[in-house]
Amino acid sequence: MKRLRKAIRVDNLGTQQRAGSAKWGRLVYIGLITTFFGSLLYYLFGNVVVLSADGIVLADIRAVDASYTATIVEVYVKQGDHVEEGAPLMRLESFAMVKEIADLALRDGELAVREGQLRGQLNVIKTVKPLAERNARETTSTVEKFDKVSGRGLVSLTTRDSALQDSLNAAQRLAELSSQEVSIESELALVAKSRVQSNRAMEQLQNIYADGNVKAASSGVIGVKVPMPGQVVQLGEQLLQINGNTAYVLAYLPDQYLFQLKRGTVVTIRSGGETTKGRIDSILAVADALPDEFQNLFRPRDRSRLFRVKLEGSNPFAVSQKVTVSGCALGFCWVR
Image 1 (cartoon, rainbow, N blue to C red):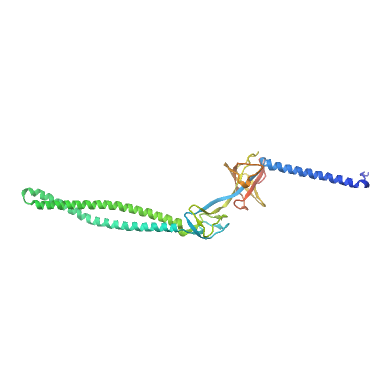
Image 2 (image 1 turned 90 degrees about the vertical axis):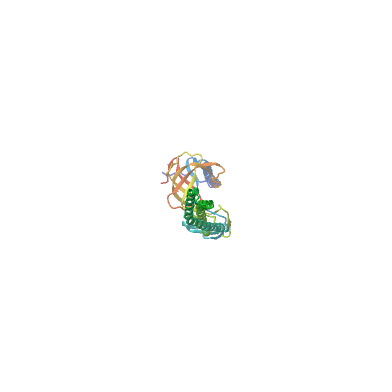
């Protein structure tokens, strides 16, 4: 049995073709409208049911600050260089530090001279003091003997008075030596203590200055800001940053979401054409303001709770690069 088909009328051919084109045009228009509103709804409310968190790639940062006012003479590294712990970074020159170290060295020299003088005086006193003690004992014994025989008229008053004066002088000399010995020993202890403090301060300054050589305190990658030779830096001013070798992602949770994230959840980290996997390391008990580059005119958020993602494989991202963390919808995570 033949299938009956509607015969195309030659006199109405153009009208029929336009009607078919209009039908397809309406379908395309409806599809575009549906796609637009669907995208708009997902843009506004998609993060409620689907994990799509903004994040930033970070690493443990070690700041290298200026420990003194100085002029940068040489710089041995540039942006992006990988350095190991102890590697030379730059050389500084500081007249103030050199003068301070020289002053401490001069002060230590003066204290050393004074310590030598005091030790010499103390040695003299320790040598003379036994003789002074013997002289004091003998003169005292002579006076006692004169006192015993003075009543018999065997010793004149002049001789007795002379012996008494000698005993007084001997006792006075012994007292002076004893007093000087105590004073010198006390001053010597203070000088020795001052020398220890001076040497410690000079050693600390020399370690800080290190002839102007600045070395890396940890291994990592040099940051984007590197000073130029001839630049003058002040105390506490940051010279450069060393980004650690281990990177992680710090992401911002949406304000409202109908799912629960937990530690150990595997997620996808994406930025541009690079994609890798990560695992939620912790849900932080703190919130932070969203960076300006993450702010959305249609979804203003003052602060969002943070969570940290540890990268599972190799890190294809740069430090401070913006990324998107995804992989879950309504509690179901499809990343494994």
